[in-house]
Image (cartoon, rainbow, N blue to C red; front, side):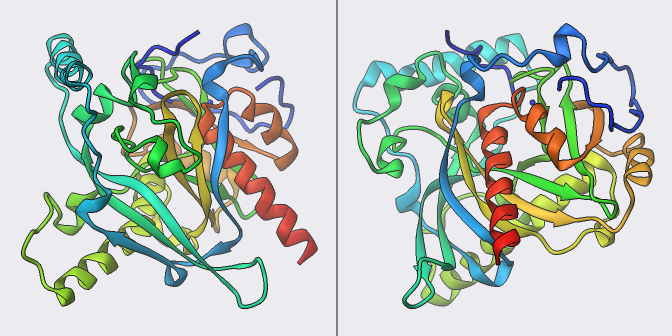
Length: 335
């Protein structure tokens, strides 16, 4: 059963949740009710796979970006399938004239370096190209999305004809050991009402990228790679600040913990772990006046054990984020 292509990004009864502070007009769904508490394990939208796991958590100094047009999307050889991208986009524009075709970083794979003589990851290089929202809607979110895939055991080859912008997500832990989870608004396109971690996308335009430069020299290319690398980390801080209302100086430097992919629509998302020096009750107060008041309607601050039950009602990419967080916690426990 396919997921509605324009439904964006997801507990049962949780006795340890703090009171929810609503923003704007809310469709508040009590925990334990049918709509919010449904835990359907057969929901195809919750399926995920882990593309990359960095269980030790990598700081910005050990995560690099190679930004190059060779990692851009390759057009599909089926001309009619390619034309469907424009058709779907034009249809969406007619329905919602306010849609904006912004550019995004495209995930084109990665390379890993290991600590000598071990399986411990020393550093990761993310391969990034450019894509845009129009192509994302017309490939990954298209009802025909599976036709864009290529049979292969290599992940980057499987998705070579898809837009696949790299999303981001943050596992944020408060000073009193709670994890922050949002419930998506019922007004958004993908996965309304599902639970998610705060996140969105790193933005090329934040570092002055609007297109590939064809005549850049090696020095300029290296500088652009460095800026793109930092935007991976700056971007997730920005998302947490905008979506939850936390001051940036209340957050630790993010640790990169890996990439998950939603099976439906093959949507990749990079996940990061951050700590906040505020208690959960303080976070809830700040959430009520957060800058981004459209995508979510509620915030939950939960114990780690309760997070497992909420993950059942998360979109696959975010459910994969929970899996990456569990792997990090297990590695920390035994280190």
